[in-house]
Structure formats: C-alpha cells, structure tokens
Image 1 (tube, protein in one colour):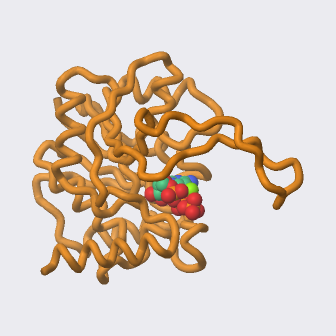
Image 2 (image 1 turned 90 degrees about the vertical axis):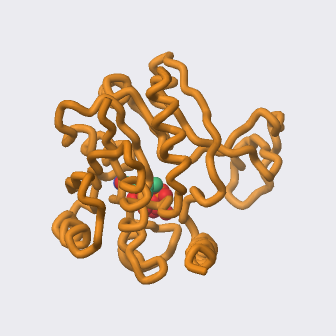
Image 3 (image 1 turned 180 degrees about the vertical axis):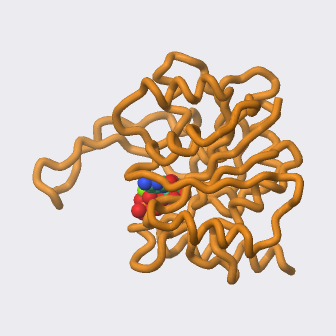
Length: 235
Ligand code: CTP
Ligand code: MG
C-alpha cells in the first residue's frame, strides 16, 4: 500500500504574532514548511507529499519546494487551502490521485518530528488500524472548567480527569484513506484534529508513542525551543 501525506500549511499563525504565514517563517534560516516536508519525505514509505498552502500563497510555496533539495523518490504537489484547518485538509484529500491507500495528515507547524515517529504511525496503519495518532502523556494536571459568565471572572472547575489516562496528541496522524475521506465528507462541526472525525464515525482510533520534538510551534516561546532543538541537532 502506497502512502501519501497531506500537510495543512494554510494557517496564518495568529498566536505566533504578526508576520508572514506561520508555515513560511524561518527556523534555522529555512521555512518551517520545508522542515515539515523533509520530515515526511525522510520516511522511505512516503511517496507523495501534498502541501496545502495559504489560499493566496500556492505559487510561493511551489517555488519554495523547487528551491530546496528534496528526495527524488518523493512526489510533491501544492494546493490552496481554506478558512479552517478541517477545510484545508479536505482540499488536500481531494487533490490525492488514486493508488494511495494510506494517508497521513501532518501539521506544517510540527516541523521537527523525527522519522521514527512517522514510520511508527505508518506501521500501525499497515498493521490494520484505520486511524493512528502519535501521543505523549501529560506533564500538567488538566481541569475541565465552566467558562466564566463574565469574561475575566474566575472559572469554576467542573472535573479533574485522571491524568494517567490522558494523552496529548500530535501529528502525523495516519489513516486508511477511505475512512478518512468518509470522515471529511460526513462529519461537521468544530474539530481540532482528524482522528476525532474518525471517532465520530464510530471507528476505533489507536495511539502510538509520540515524540517531544514533534511539538507544535504555536506561540513565540515555541520558536525559541525549535531553534534550540535544531541547534542541538547540528552539533
Ligand atoms: N491550518 C490550515 N488551514 C487553516 C488553518 C490552519 O492548513 N485554515 C494548518 C496550519 O497551517 C498548521 C496546522 O493547520 O500547520 C495547525 O494549526 P495551528 O497550529 O492552529 O496553525 P495556525 O492556524 O496557522 O495558527 P493560529 O491558530 O495561531 O492562527
Ligand atoms: Mg489555528
């Protein structure tokens, strides 16, 4: 079964602060998106990478891919994205040619995921799971709250889920293609990852080990960490 990766990279990066779209910002002098593409193409199982670019940035992303050295064994395509992550992923899925039975979805905002994590996800799908998410145990205790009636007021705690049973999930998430396509055709409403859409179909999602370096670059401090991880790799 051949494997393709969809990389949603169409977000603006509002939480990172003003500047270029997040995926195009530099990390160690190279756009974050290029790191993410290389991380996917590093897996020998991956034969196609579809980048979902900012809606008005597809041409710029195409020339970026042309300008950076990428493995010959991998094909690359670029499509414009949408208003939400969910819509961007759907547009990426619609651009997939036939012949790819396994599809990974990977955030451009997780540029440093190690290849072993990618391979672990693909292996679990090959072994028969319809949906696979890499995840880590939580360091923090998590509280469920009742959103404050008046913004700024203290929020009452409703529950404290047992931390040992919680996982923080990352990407790449891996799927049986038909299952993921059906999820994107039928599930509506706000979701923050693709696996939760498969859960809503009533299908089983499984967790495999994630990696600390697969963290998402969301806020300015995450850029500091990403630069430090890159510098350590270059030692
Ligand atoms: N994404 C996308 N299309 C959107 C929104 C997000 O392809 N309309 C992608 C982002 O480019 C990112 C991934 O989804 O690679 C995870 O989203 P997030 O970390 O929230 O990135 P942004 O939406 O860009 O950041 P923010 O929410 O702070 O604006
Ligand atoms: Mg976002």
